[in-house]
Structures are given as structure tokens and as C-alpha cells.
Length: 160
Image (cartoon, rainbow, N blue to C red):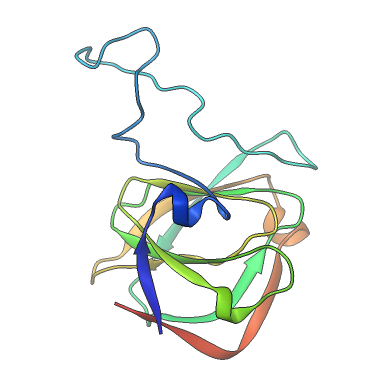
């Protein structure tokens, strides 16, 4: 069983970056006391084949904590987050899939994660008994043009 880890730069940087929107540093042209604060360019994505980013809503119901398949994108990075509930998600290093290297991370509600190109991942699992909604950011039609999915020979369980 895979243990859920807290997101930290030292344990997630090989897969991408993450953002806690409540801890963004100093706002641009404002103080922390101003009623509106803007924090530019906190997550930057690269795309090889497009300069367009599409946001797609994703709804997730509670389901068994079993990883049965996993995917990667060869030419683009992916952004997920803004979930209304805490979730967990899996990631594994880019390259040939080694199931023993899959890791699982907790993504608190409202946080965001950027997956680097080639990093193995899959849709999150909601932590708790309430459904959640969030957003996935990818170039349009990535899910049909650059989504490589592998079914695992045996499910991998996530320990709560």
C-alpha cells in the first residue's frame, strides 16, 4: 500500500510544482492589507504543440483507493487543482513506468499542482465522503492527441 505524503518541494519537485494560493509571497503593487492582492506567474506551464490553455472542469465522487491505470503526456505539462475538498493523487517519474516508484500526495482544497511533461499521473481521489469539483488545465484536445494510458497488471492500493 502506498502512503499519502504531504506536498513539499523536496519530495515533489521531480514531478513538477505546486501552489498554495494562501501562501504566495508578496502581491504585485499592493500590501498584504489591501482588499485585492494579485500574485502573478506563480505557476508557469510549457507546451510544445500549442500556445492555448483550456480549463476543463472535473467532478470526482468518492471511490476505492486503488490505482488501476496511469497516464502521461509527451508534449505538454498539466495543471490540476482548485478542488472544493482535499484530494490525493499519484505520480511516478517520467520514462518507462516502474510501478514500484509510484508515490501518492495530498492536495489540500484550493491548492494547485503542475505535472512536468512525461510524468505519470491520474485523476485524484477525494479524501472524505463528499464529492469534489476542480479544474484541469491542458491544451485543447490533449486527452485525444497526447494522452498515453497504461492499465496496471495489478491495482496499487493507497493507504489512508
